Image (cartoon, rainbow over all chains, first blue to last red):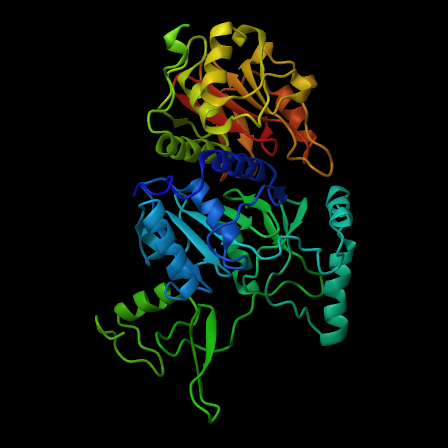
Length: 289
Length: 186
């Protein structure tokens, strides 16, 4: 591959992103501004995550991309091919074999190891943005550690719905200092934010990079009488029978028929390979796709 | 013109820089972990590891401060040729390079309350680097780690400034370790 520089971006851009990543790791949860570039894909398709991955990848890496847990959606396939082409990296769908995983809106079910890096695609990095539209104001609120507004929002959830209704992009406090948007992952995934691997977050349109180093304290905001609860559909996976994984609900006919299945396709497939069969599943066969 | 100024850079820039950055990022994400880097042969007194860090992170957008022991014409020329980085006084520097005793810690930018990332990263040339000495705790460290630090007081004061503060990269021959502002040293 010689038509592009390694990993598409020019070296000066990568250095700028790399410096932002290092400051992000030094100030966990703080959003570092960076000069986001135009990428050969539209905003909202993971341009932030792609730029972070481009700055992090080496030719020795094995790269995996998931979109809502799935390896085989358009977004995941096109980003995987992009780096296969421009960086010459090996690619995989197996979580355990990947050294860098770019993700849109999920954390893999399988626990990540210390030598793995998780890169998140982030649409709106500012957790306070829907409460306060002004960047000047939200920046001041972060500087003053003034997060009362976020608790008011969660309180209003309780007063209106009887419960904290926020189900995804559930705000967290990192290392007791910055309130951070974990990207639109389901709150089921929030407990996994304390992990052994390095987590990097890239927001291309909003031009922000932030990070969580390994073993960093990440607390989901809650109240003493309404403690945080990671939730999922109260069901087992209909394909592999897993009861511990996050599920997608799929409408299968016009009569209201539906099934639940693991959103993490690699997790589901590897369970089926191991012989697990769900209520509507069939035994796994090598070429049965 | 001395030709050795022109030598000692990365031979395959994108690839060498990608490996070097992964090593530096690992070090910054896991304070106390010592990593090895290769690819630079800078002129003395600069260590190979410090040379790699400069080639990987510095360019015309990053003013560098050279501490007295490292402010040699040859080193200035080498950094200018390979990175194009301008030289600056401590208060304007994004990166600083030198031995611990030569660095005027109080003069560097620790960032602002609204932009704590606008703070200096100090590349500290060290005679030794080992996992013995001060105890480290904080983000990136599972229980505790240890690192040979020149002292502890300065790092405690620096951590007390959080989220402001300086970040440190310690270099020794071809090895380096990092200490971000979040690490609690005792």
